[in-house]
Length: 199
Image (tube, rainbow, N blue to C red; front, side, top):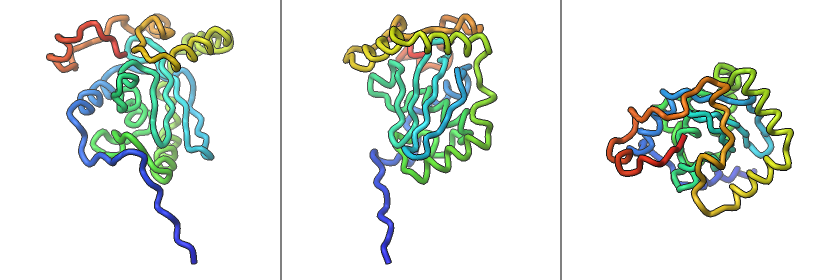
């Protein structure tokens, strides 16, 4: 009889939610963010792609899987649990912010399958879809392709921290504010780094 080898988590498990992640969690559950298309799970690789309008309308790509990733500046600076990933786990997948599964840096296969099933039960993000005009514009941008793909390639290959001009912004079509609400941000951090716009 063969025994199944336990899958190894690619990063250590978090037993409690770090303070910085709690701050991002607060933003993820309070700010208005939207999906440009319904997510589709690849159960072979256990990955799911999300395209998300951040709180000021910047468009970010999230790859959820064993090591969730996001194209936002915050993630690219090394904050591997950005508010966009937390938005996916809590709002799209319906995992309680108090559940330690909502803020992990890495997941194993059994956990991902359970999370994707939960997401399907919640309607695959139906309640958080962007307006029809936004989705139409996003599809048009995606189909214009060569320029869009080259921009994404330049961004993914660059070692610098991206800024707002590196991202498509569809906030005007969605009716989002172009300036973020900083009322839930850590006061010291915002006073020290007011020019950073991780939306």
